Length: 331
Image (cartoon, rainbow, N blue to C red):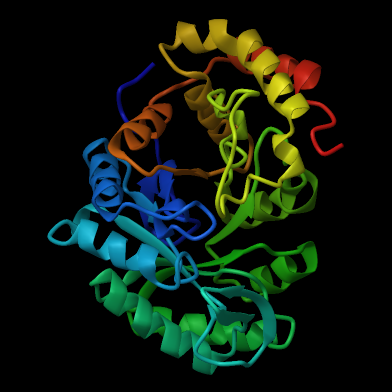
């Protein structure tokens, strides 16, 4: 085991970042029962101190709240961070398709050039920076041709406002269109031990094309962390409250998995959550794993996963435990 953070390149952009990234959806508060700004800033700064350079955010996380907090946390330390943020979920226009309401405002999926050029300026302002390292289309917009979207992103790259281009929540056909534009650096998709669809649908394409993959929900909204027991109760607007994934039965399966892999975790001086994150990063085609944290302790726990190096026997043991315990999690 090495004490150094694993570093990887974002596609062919020349931008390098820590393989473990800090995801800041929860820091925005929405769907996570609110946010504590002071603790959130401390979590971001603790991540940087631990060598986690990749900070992932989005305007939709709290209608700009997450980006503002990231901006405050990085004041005076911008050069230490690789910022990924997004575009395409808008509330300044009714163009595109309605997606959801947040705080009484309708949010639309829209990736027209006019919105992208507007959104990037708003994000730069909230983040307190003059460039974004990785700019990602958050959800795809069937009302706008991908060619128009990609041309707008390339325009921003040429202007120096962004350094790399990404797309998130894409289908195979959409990914093929982005790759045809020949400038895509990354995709960001849900991937975990219990969400592996992209292994057959998308990862063969990205690996062949030199496109990086950022996994989100690597811990399946915390389910795979090993710390959410069968007795835990979710309240308020916490999205996990009515999520069938968090059934008592599923939490018992995770407990069985955690018991099975604990000897491998202990061999590396790691927690089960750190083992899950490190396993994610060891999967072919997965370049970065985004992990949420709302306080410094969680941030440091996640960061440690980036220093773990598994041998083939470790990975075989973990895969066997997955096959034996984490089955039928959606039923």
